[in-house]
Image: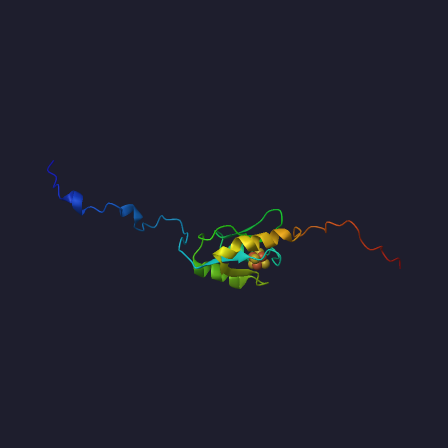
Length: 128
Ligand code: SF4
């Protein structure tokens, strides 16, 4: 077999980095802002999770949407999810505010959607 040794210098050494159509459809792009769900206003309709399924999931206990990662979907897809939210509770925020916003949510005594209130007290029924 007669090989040309110069072929080694012509071959692309990082050809696996080039698009081949088998990549996951994740955005992976850097953004200036982070996406955040105000869970106190979320009604659990799932529109956002359907639009940007790599970014939003419905938290199983509370039934409210949460952005679980920042690089899961392209900006346009996340923006589409934001625009589908019927209560406008998804926002672009500075990354450095995420932990404070999370802490503020944790301070609220949010209740799971679709559950009865924690209090078992109720008004006496009015006899007719
Ligand atoms: S679209 Fe809005 S209200 Fe509906 S689940 Fe997502 S964040 Fe909640």
